[in-house]
Image (cartoon, rainbow, N blue to C red):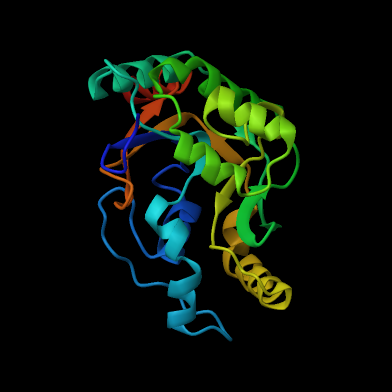
Amino acid sequence: MTTNHQPRYAVYYALPRESALWSMAQTWLGRDCENGARLPQPALEGWTQAEIAEVTESPRRYGFHATLKAPFPLAPGISRGELRDAVAAFAAAQQPFQAAPLTVSAIGPFLALTLSEPTPAMAALATAAVTDLDPLRAPLAEADIQRRLGNGLSSRQEELLRAWGYPYVLEEFRFHMTLTGPLAQPEKRARLQSALAAHFKAALEQPVPVQEVCLYSQDNREAPFFLAERFRFAAAATTEQGQAKS
């Protein structure tokens, strides 16, 4: 049985550290998820700093990312070192690719960066992360299952939740990098979507490089997530080594 005091881990996609969008998105959320530093959030016309801090409170705690394998406590008998080795081996088996450019979209009441067109390689990466790394995951506690069921899942999503610990996997997967918490008022949500599209415009024009996955960690359910380590795909690491020698 899991408790709120156990560490949790997640396998996420994060943009390259050197990319302009990574820097802009972390600043928007107001926290550097690699070192925990609070960052001054940008000004948006028509929005106060207090409003921006409020709408980013939830994603700020998780750190900027796209979910591949959702947060989980470790299975009994699995150490953090074994988890790290498994994620490193998983990454070493992957091939780099480019995903479609991102766009600011509404997903229900939330705003997020989503792919501007389908990228099958991204869906395949997420499916592989969910299935290949599942032996590392502790079973969901019944309280977590009931909490998720209260969100109005379909029968298929409930099946996925019970099988894989998260309802939005396999064919239900949709790549997204969350920018806000829930915005209940459609007019307010549309207004912020327009403002964020303008704010991020220059950084959203390029395809998204996918050449690593990241291990995020959380000390307990009340703590923020940190990006603990990046794991390069084998081909990407080999290319970099060759360039360094030339």
